[in-house]
Amino acid sequence: MFKSKKKKLFAIILTSVILIIGAGYFCFKVAVNKIGYSFYLKKVAIFSDPNFVPDIKNLQAKEVYRFYWSRTFHHPVLITVIVNNDEQGVLNLRVTGGAGGYEPGKLIENKDTYIKAEEIHNLREIVNSNQFWKQRITRDFGLDGASWTIEVKYKNKYYFGGQWSPKSGSIRNIGMYMINMSGLNLAPNEVY
Image (cartoon, rainbow, N blue to C red; front, side, top):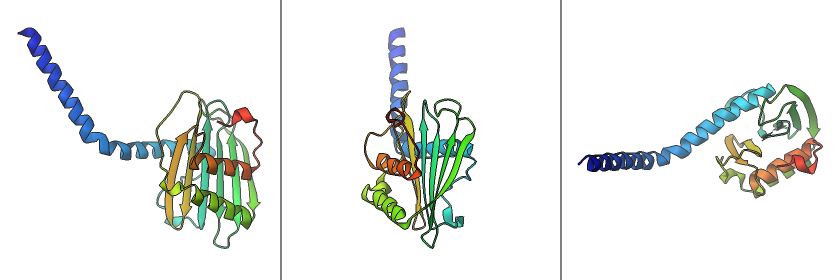
């Protein structure tokens, strides 16, 4: 009789866990995105960059593209492209002296570069052709690697997406284009 009570209790607990997991499944994706965004905002704050919040109506820029790259063993990088209403663009490159998987360190590079209309056009094309608008943040992490996060303010809408060490796809393509635009010099083993 004692063994059957244990089995019954186990069955009740197991059923409860299954029901809780089932009921919470649809909320999980939303919660993960909110948690990921909150975590992201804390990471970006190390660059002394104002929070890039979903309520972007107060931003004066026509378009904003931002790439945050946190590599486990290399300096964190933040690249921001701001396009004004007159189609003039500025690329801001910020790098901290630590490592993304450890202490991020203090700001060691903060450089603005004016960019040509052709580069702005190419960035838009890469974002559009890679269907970034359908990309959302994924929560696949690893011990060693890099978090690639892209934010875009475009046509008064806000988009946020990211991946862990992407080998291909929209996040990788946009991030690599922005790295190239910035002129950041990297050895092949620093890109992961």
